[in-house]
Length: 135
Image (tube, rainbow, N blue to C red; front, side):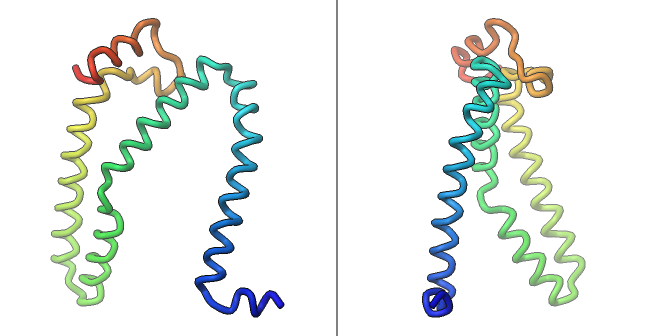
């Protein structure tokens, strides 16, 4: 019976996607009260802000990982080590440029101890929000 239901890869993928979403919902429903209990509302709020900033930073990836894997695999298949070095140098430079832009726009609003201790100095968050996350 199950073999007929999951006869195609598409059906199996759809089922696994739905099951994964259901499991994630259950885990989140259990995790949020635990986070609030152990962290408290203020620290949990700061943690959510940092998680949101990191999530937005991941959007700036622009699909570079997938593209570089494909291109490096093609050059590896051709045994072209110079091509691999060119691609890696280019993507490292591009990623470094994005990091410099990201650091210049966001980092002054979030101090290093904030990331390590999950606490914000009084007034720093308000100052960052009013200044638009810029220096």
